[in-house]
Image 1: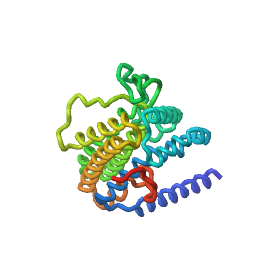
Image 2 (image 1 turned 135 degrees about the vertical axis):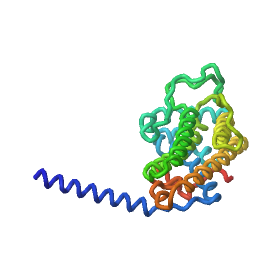
Image 3 (image 1 turned 30 degrees about the horizontal axis):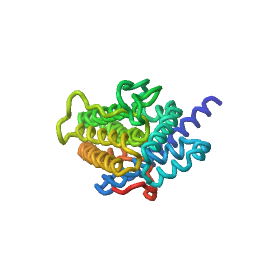
Image 4 (image 1 turned 90 degrees about the horizontal axis):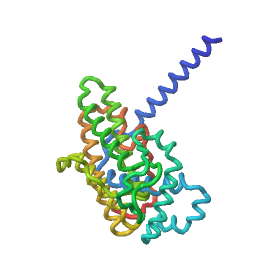
Length: 285
């Protein structure tokens, strides 16, 4: 009886591995065009900033109570400063309730307490009180892991498994950067702080700082205001350059089969949300 169970268990595992491999090999592996990258980065921003927090995190009771405010945000209407502060405090409280679950999706999610209490915040007070995901720190860790993964991939001569895993990890961290910062724009935070050493112009690190600084600037603007939209667009333009550079380095280092196994940017096996091309977005780039 024990041998029979072991036999069927082994067979089931083989079948599951075969199905998983077939699924991975079926996925598209051609690099994204510049137009696709621009379109998908905008959709990714909308998923993280609006779709997930509004539809997955808010309770039915919260949606009913804040219906007018949420409808204004979702439709792209400009909020006044008071409404923006109210909305950001609502999203901050919702994110707090989901921290323990979100950390399972991103090991770089950085939970800190009472950050920058001597600095002004974006709701007319000081600091970020309480126990919260500090999106800036989380995104910085994602970028550090993205950079490390690309370096490991390019150094893994003769080790295809290492190249594949490193490329897959790079794409996941690339996606997580926007997942943190897009929703961070709608949370309570303090102003941007530059790194101790400024990166070289034109480098990936420079593009990351440009996008982080622009997202942080949007945090201090009324939601959906012209300045807010301009800051988000600047951030996403820099993010597009990060995607292009990451994609270029991965395609140069991996064979066609390795690229298929690793997945491209936003492939489902990079644990990325799947943007719906028909999703409504608040503004066009």
